[in-house]
Image (cartoon, rainbow, N blue to C red):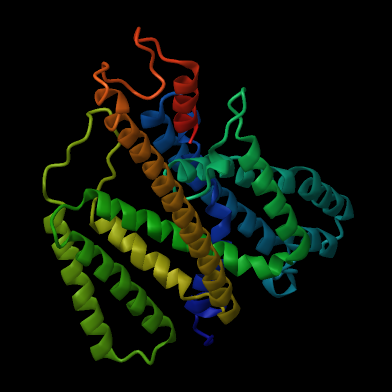
Length: 357
C-alpha cells in the first residue's frame, strides 16, 4: 500500500480479511435451519437472525480494537491472536485463560452450533428426494439418529485429516456460495413470467463475471460498462417479473426490497468470493463437484425406486382387472377374495407387500 493509504494492506487487504472472517457469521444461517424448533417462527426467526448478526458484528469490532490496542498489528500471531498478544504484554495468566477457554468453551460451542442444525437440514433435503431417505429417519423419540451419526462421522474424519488453515477458504467460499444460492432462490420464488428463470440466471452469471473481472481482470472500462449495463437490464426485468401481487398470508414474513436487495447481495458475495486464493477456488470446486455427485446419485436411485414401485402397482392393477372369475360367471373381485366378500389371508399378504414396496 502507499504511504497515504488509509487501511493497512489497502482496500484489497480489507476485502480479503472480510472474506476470511466470513465464516464467523455462520451463526445466523444456523438459526434459520432450526425454524422447525421455533414456537413462533414468523416472529422469532427474523428477530434471532438480526440479533445474531448484530451481536457477532459488535463483538468482532470490539475484539479487533482490543487486540490492535494491546500490540502492533505486525506482531499479532495469525494462528493465536489473543494468546500471543497477552504473552507479548506479559499477562501470561490471561494467555492461559484464553487458551483454556478456547479448548473447553469456544471450540465445543462452535462445533455444537455447526452440528446442531445439520441433521435437520439434511432431513429436509432427504424428504424432498434430493438425498437418501436415511437422513430423514427418526427414532421413537423424534431424533434423527442416522443423520446425526452420518454427519458426525464425516465431520470427525475431516477434522482429523484436514488442517484448519486448508479449510479456511473452503468454509468462507462455501458460505458465500450458499448465500448466493439462497438469494437466487428468493428471486426465483418471487418472480413470475416465462422469462423469469432466464433473467435470474443471466444476472447471477453476469454479476459473477463482473466481480471476477473487477478483482482479477485488466480493468477495461468498456468491458465493465457492458457487463454493468447487462446486469442492470436483468435487474430491471426481474423488477417487472416481481411486480405481480405477492400472495402470502398476512402473518408470514416477506423479504423487503426484492429484487434489489438480493441482487445487490449476490454481487457483493461474488465480489468477496473473488478474493479467495487459487487453492480456495479449487477446494470450493471440488466440494461443489462432490455435492453434485451425491445429488445426482440420490436422484437416480430415487427415480429407479419410484419406477420399480410404479411397475408393481400397475401389475397389481392388471391382476385386478383380468380376474378369471368373470369368465366363470362369478362375481368380480380381486384374486384371493372369497365368495362371501371376505378377503382371504393370501390377498391381505399381497396387499401388505405392495404397500411396503
